[in-house]
Image (cartoon, rainbow, N blue to C red; front, side):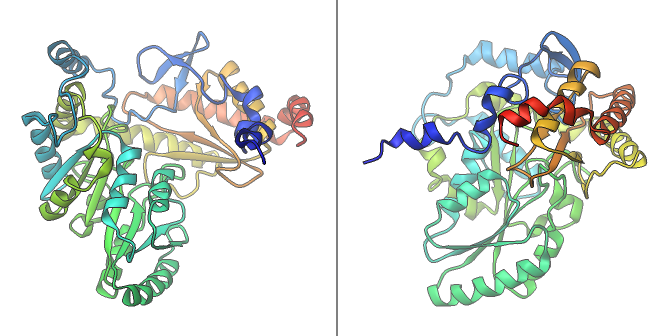
Length: 419
């Protein structure tokens, strides 16, 4: 009989195998200082392109004051207990009402965490006879939520309406046999590539097929649409999103998430969403903090305007210099380069040590082998000077990648890992 831990010891996984070379620098790095466009990494100031504080709320004095006042008044525990038992307050209800109004839905329900919440929502929305059809590039939280489903599920090719329709035909045929319904899942913005989901095209298929649509709009909420209500508002189909989901971890610079839908659906979820029924209520620090942040989203459009000024400057500058940023239609700015994992390590070290640029690095297995993805998140706190310095640095590192400098520097690491 095999010891359960033998496999874990022998196979660290596709990312874990790099731990000795990467941990503490390339993964699990420590950014220090106030959350802003420039922070400290290993004692040096770096321009920070990897913090999801889109609207720059995290370090604003008025935001920190509300957070601090709530902590002083309530501590970190209140309210104590799950919402259904002893953790319900007027402030929770107020936040839910204001969120629902902001995204133009009848009702909303607070969630403690985005990852946990969307998983549990998927689990609650479908029964064993129902069929799920979802975009193959959906976030890990959606994939894990789908895994909880004991019924049938199909994936459609990323943002491919023909593939979606083909799978809706399969799902419709199966639903007629099982007596179930169909849930389609997509994202408002796909956080790795920056592409908006094809929500308008998905909604158009409702005329032909009977399904409900769940949209994860974590990256669209606060950044897209005239008022910042997200990708549905941006594409003019917010009313046709049956269940809208977003987190506070991006534009709201906080902790928590919410679901919004017709009142009847939210009432059902309140009594069947296991991750909330059996979890402690969202602490008042985060509830009052979210109320303040939401008010700023509504009343300070200049924050979103500044964000998009920086987004456009960065993305246009990269394209003018011939960089491949894919087909992003959001603030998320991917830069695709060709190279191995050891080369990516050398490149990122050069960026951080010699150019003072900190951005996230993504390699296989998240993206195909031979590709390096540098993922950048512009915020309202960045400046045009930050953009100019970054564009110069990227031009330099591309030249070094293409002339083999990083290949030579990474030869020892590549040999050690059998690359």
